[in-house]
Image (cartoon, rainbow, N blue to C red; front, side, top):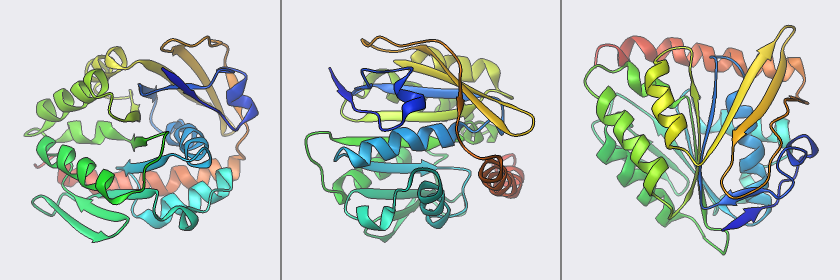
Length: 250
């Protein structure tokens, strides 16, 4: 197993040997505790090291928000990685999926077969080198609000975390609701990490388990300004409120 070189000092302190790959990672924590922002640190390091990325940010309204967040947080201009980055946008109003451009796909991610197909499609669209593909997903717990698809979605994510070593997966989930289901995903992952937020908007991060590398379980303060934390949290909250009523009826 190889390791990804980490670009950021606060994260290097905890995993000096880097992120092992191909592995699966869950970042868990209460709603609004900055989980995807930590994810973006791994994504930025992956891109800077030559890897390719597939994004599945369920709670963000568009690829533009992912681009602006990556630029503000980690000085990554995704326009420079067009051939190495594909964004999959969650859209419950379509039956399966639609390819919008070379690096954007819309998909009904409630359906496990659609999830698996669009990940394969996205992987076929990007250039790949030695590091391979990282798939990051955020707010995956949103899928569990659908009475029809909840169990199938949970099982599919659990299977990906446990069994698929063709790619490196890093998913963030809120444990504020569906705590029992989230525990299944935490147990299924190779690497398990947690975030929490303290007033006034201070983000903290720690690691509970890692696969085959030494790590520190000490908690660190992630150096992201409260202004950026609040801006990103507010956008995600608006998007969640928009989509949740739909999910609960499906």
